[in-house]
Image (cartoon, rainbow, N blue to C red; front, side, top):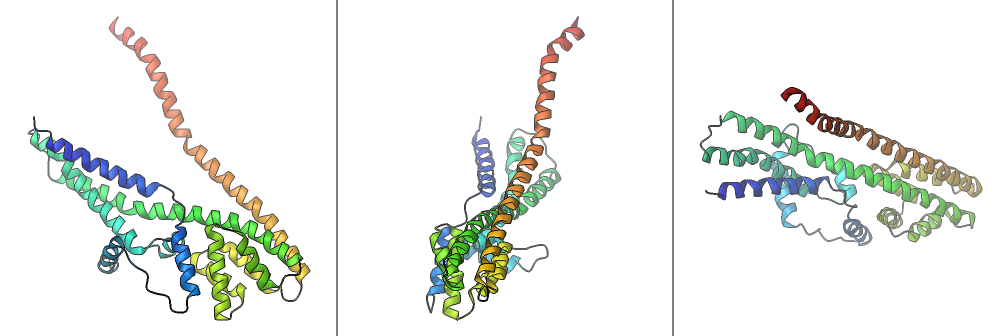
Length: 295
């Protein structure tokens, strides 16, 4: 018996499952990309970033497929996660191609066994699988970006308290923002540090740099900090109260959001739990039903 087609089929299916699991994982946003972006803001003449092979091939595909209707690259979410659009397009194309090939490869053992399979069956199934795998990277990036923004909001809740403490100790608005950002070591603080460094180099107000960072990555909490600090040059005590009030309001908002996500996850488990209970009941009743039918 020739097992080569079975081995090839198993390898193709395993590779597809591995790629799908890799896309659905939730890695933290790339800190290296954020540090590189910060270094480029500090340097007067930043060098062009070095593109790896996947990014080069992906951008080549993006130039040719980007004009097609329905092809959209979430550049804002990718920038927040520190991923390049080329690698994203390469992942989408690779998964779609794998989806087209899987039904064909799976049908090989049937053909070898002499079972006639109509041509349109693997073709239609391949198009369906390719369509599902084509949108999988979009869903994965959207989920990762959502969680990254939630993590950023948690970090900014602590940042608000730090800025308020600096302002309470008679630090200036710019100094309070910079010194508070230097305390943190996570990637959200790295992003804020880069924005404040750019503000100092470009001679613009720091709250304007925070507003630009909010617009660049869609981080609404930065808009609140910028608006509060915009009036900090006139009344430090009022700003301190506003900062502490916003921090006190932000933490319950984040907790409520986490509770809502936990409830949604629990509701998603209701259907599998009910199905499992039905299966257990059928398993327990099966011997009695068989005995009744055979007696």
